[in-house]
Image 1 (cartoon, helix red, strand yellow):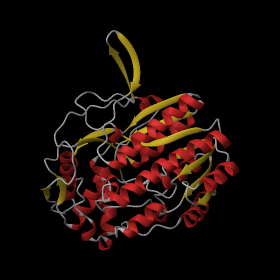
Image 2: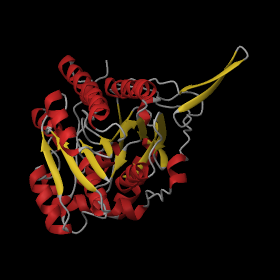
Image 3: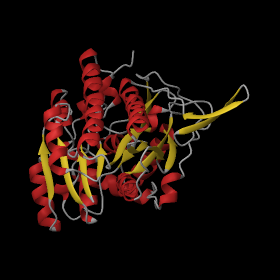
Image 4: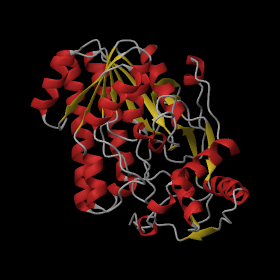
Length: 382
């Protein structure tokens, strides 16, 4: 298929592009380097330098013999967006092109406004471009498990059957986002559901949990093809951050009681989930929702695992509770369903001690590049 990856420079976007290209699809990526710019502005650049998209595409062609097309520009600009879609005319669109960080969205009014404008603007333009230039294309949208919040009932896979006063209907599972970023993801889902009903689009919305790791089948032979490794409080995911903290001797930053529980997945599983969704598309007029994670852990669970493996590697890891800058439940019920992707054939990569040790040993090789002043910014939700 012809697959367009929006946000193709990102932590997940570039590995996804290589993964799909390696399996014979014709892939093009689009990005405006927003995430790189924001990281530079906030002085939270990643652990190691990452080549730009043109350089990455050249490296991938040399490694694999496959070409990935590159388009640099802002998808909030309709003329640019229309030009990409009209020239490429994709069979599938993978939509990662958003400001991806909850903490960034809570920094200040400017960051909040940017998050709203970018995330909703790109989603709207993507919808309009698909309808005009590729009406049969399948949109695979990366949502987040954070849309659901932490309700005191089981979280179903996107939909909830309701019986009320003797009548029954089916609704999107109630959303209660925990940050402005997560709220824009809720709005994305609502936009997509509206235009699925109005225009008969075909959409898969992937409610993804936090991702960890950097290694995929496509990059292990050449570290220049690795994705970003962010370890700061703004753009770093929790397990990636804990690994950095363990390696450099910083106490693991457990917020509050540490009972916050979420669904996690290895970066390899993200790529396979996206591919399986593309190769088994939603029907026209269908908003299909999968909860995309493989295991659930509390923050304390993750910290304990990092300490155990780190201590075995001679790191003498310390766990410390810090005042929680977020507004969230620190102890709660959490039982989300996640059968859809398994039924499509997902074979999960679980968080074993060996997987964690490999990641920690990789970070040890880059230990001299860690800046401890990037780790905590104490961004308060209120």
